[in-house]
Amino acid sequence: MLVNKSQLGVKPDSEKNTKTCRGSDVKSWLKHHPNPLMRALFRTLKQIRCANLPTPHFYNALLYRLMVLLRQSSDYVYRTFITTPAFKGRVKACGKQLYLYGGLPLITNNVRISMGDDCNLSGQATITGCSSVKEPRLNIGNRVSIGWQTTIAVGDLITIEDDVAIAGRCMFFGYSGHPLDPKRRAAGEGDDPSQIRPITLQRGCWIGSNVMIMAGVTVGAGSVIAAGSVVTHSIPEGVIAGGNPAHVIRSLNIPR
Image 1 (tube, rainbow, N blue to C red):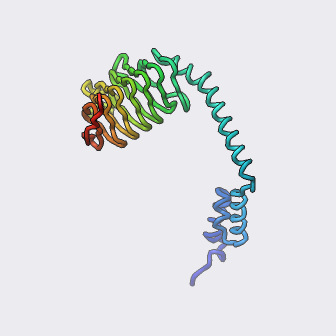
Image 2 (cartoon, rainbow, N blue to C red; image 1 turned 135 degrees about the vertical axis):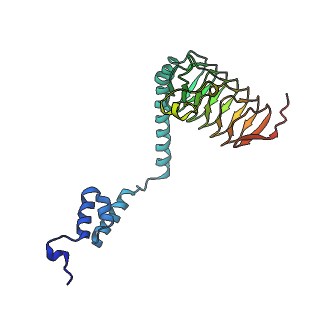
Image 3 (cartoon, one colour; image 1 turned 120 degrees about the horizontal axis):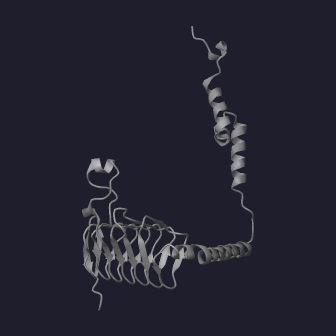
């Protein structure tokens, strides 16, 4: 003979689940409630949440321009009086007309940074130095642009010459951060000396988005590295290179 749970004074699973949902998530409780009136209430509240006022276009356009002006003004004040002076207080040398936008870069360890004139740098960039090296150096030339969320991990030396353009989310690994030996790695030891090598970006080269450049690489003057490439060996000047690992695709035939 089958006995109903209600006859034993045990609440049905559906009722227990409903009360659990009610206590933890009112939205989910309304959305999945067995009562159609509750589900209708959920839909009504959703429509209220997404309500839009029938404002005229000229009002919308004016408000948009005011919001942009307010944001740009606050960004200018923050950049001019807070983030740029703070960044200059961390670097060894900084040239004229630095445009630091979007915040303050994360700089860790003892990396020594020198920048030339007329550089653009995203405040969402990360610059770090190898702890195994006494004074890692990052030398940045004139008119260099470094994009959003780019990471520059300096082994002993990374040189970025004049007129280099670096797009967003690039990664430069002058050191690996861990030794190859698993026991030493588990013990938290530093890099093997062979893993710490310089990186050089010669004058006028262009590094596309999401490019990864490994230790020991030189990118030749005027060369272009295609987006998403992994550069494991040096690239000659005046070419387009791409792929994983990156290889020369064609020459640019740039007039000298």
